Amino acid sequence: MKIEEGVELARFTTLGTGGPARAFARPESAEEVGELLRWARERQLAVAVVGLGSNLLAADAGVDALVLKLAGLLAVVESDGDLLRVGGGATNAVALHRARAAGLGGFEFACAIPGTIGGGVWMNAGAYGGDFAGVLERALVATADGSGWLTPAELGLTYRHSALRHGQVVLRAELRLRPRSPDEIKAEVRELNMRRKAAQPTNRRTFGSVFKNPDHELSAGRMLESCGLKGHRIGGAQISPKHANFIENADAATTADAVALMMEARRRAHERYGVQLEHEVEFLGDLEVPDL
Image 1 (tube, rainbow, N blue to C red):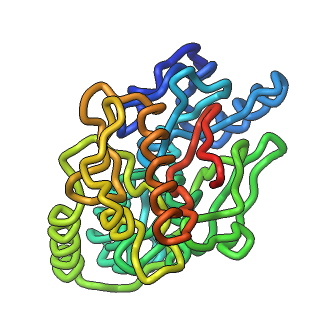
Image 2: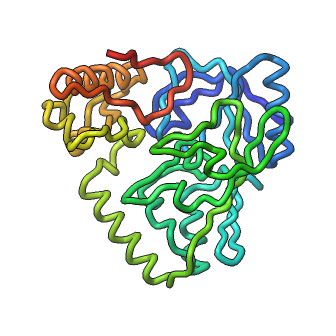
Image 3: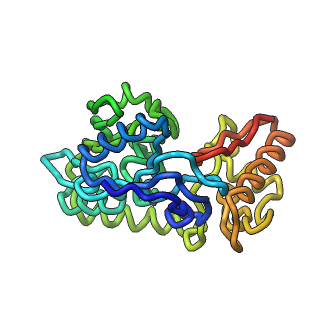
């Protein structure tokens, strides 16, 4: 296994920010992942998986960890009856394409999630009324001590959350889908993509939704919009003028710029509504948005 040093994570995040990883590797099999996890444990080094780099903010100063990007056999997608067997490194887009080709519906919601299967399981990603918990049969999760299959209950899947922690890697997943005509799947995906493009800044560099929707009559986006935050800018990062729950890289933004915007957004939402917004984006490195 080739292990690189000092790989700039800005190359692997959709926002285009982040400093160097102490170590970086692209495993192509479960055996290679196991080898890398043991290598990291021997050096007392944290492990994280980058996926497509969406829903991810990496510290500008760098990340003192082994960062993995799954490839090869870990990105393969196969159908078997009403099961879709997918590698943790497979993109949602490829998995959805294979599902449609096999006449399997239920994964259409993932057209709005520009990430990987492993990332989807990790955060129980969802959109438009669907989420991974609703289709996941089980996931194969690796640690330095070995790997094993876990059910959604064992994974602790709740709203945009799982019990998985760094050092655990989703190698594969099985999605239980249902028969549906490819034409119907294609039509629904087209409609969802139209809705997404109309409401979200899909042509800008973002990391996806910033905050989880709170237990409130207003969504996070509507709440922040009402606080006058659309277009608000700090450094090279700005809250999207199109959707207030997105942060855009407007001009050579840094992760620190994005975090500062998040802190200001949380402050205003708390001041006006008494709500403490919880961030959906995953942090890598020494990053924090402190409680108010």
